[in-house]
Length: 587
Image: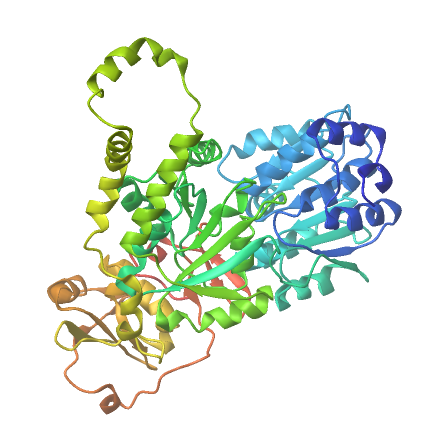
């Protein structure tokens, strides 16, 4: 079906489609829309982010809703408020010629009473985040007893964020005979469980391969030492003068830190994470859409609301905790038929994850070298030449040309070109003329065992009396230490977790800081002992724990603890915040 006319949509929807300039339905739209219009069925649709999934479930729901009734008939659950608002706006655009239709967004960060009033006036369709919807259900502000169509959008992301219990509770308030449509970019086991528990004999639509990335995106990775991660990011930006990118970090703190460093270094950058107010987020996204920001540094959760078609690059400054999340990240580029590039900056200890990602996206990730300083100078020089050649002449300068010509009269054409180009070229040449090769340090900086080799002359080995019994593994303990000590990622290394204690290294310069920070420090009312380790770890008789699932502090935007083993979540308390892990009560 090459046109929307052939999908069975009503005239009012086709009119809005024509106004928006849509001509050809995407593959997921061509498969889902006729099926959902013709049948009352449950559906599992697997399609990469950016393939038009909102229209795939939005058009059928809009056509089936009874606008003469004011009861809530459609419910759409989405993981973040940005995505919730985006879906709401798109549905309103689709329904611009449908009189009497009311679509209400239900999300945190806005007045719950105002949202309840909007629902009470009559809302046929609700678009909601699970947390706020659950809150309103508890307060009796919403009635879902007559919902006929329920959409779980980005189901894998909601699972990653720990919303399983909320989804279960919300769906328990809906009729058993409703139609449930699950849309997801990937299909991990947990999403399959949702499909089995809440759907009856669902039909399945797969666009491309399960969990695969879009074919419009090429993938490449760059291996550097941990301390060169940020310089590598800058070089990748300088090597692509027209870059318009999303840069992904794992935590809110790293996101803010990287964005601030980029701004200090003269880049048009901004941060997007959960500690920003809704107004701040809106301002950042407006600047990004207008290309006033060229490098948007974001957490995975905050980026779920980014819907910009002309992003040229996605840069994985740090790989996500859940490797499947890489599919969502790379889906930010290569949208609407455009080509895109997904870059990964890795250390040697992380490079083993590349093969895992390749299996998930079913595509090759090409190893690349970080450009040298002179490579960047050449790129910038030719970019400037092309920019000058393509610039349209502004005739308003004609009045000033006689004096300009007089000043430049003694210069030949060749000299004039040399001096014009030198103005811009000199800036990069002076910065990069003595720059080191970032690619040469990766192999020596880290060991193949997966952890950084401590330099005995320059680092101190510490003992700490918490370990696997306290629900830590090497990654979560490193995050805890990094946040508590306010150190960078590469300044806490060689973290080894035993049953009841652990070891870690920091540079010698931080020795006194580590000792003073943990002086009289308590965790759950228990004194935490940190001391310089002078004996080999084996003398303690400990054994490393590998492969065991641990509850960990989730520094994503929702501020929840996620328990992978039990599938439970709870709201993070005061002591759970990255800057203050002490005095945290056990569950």
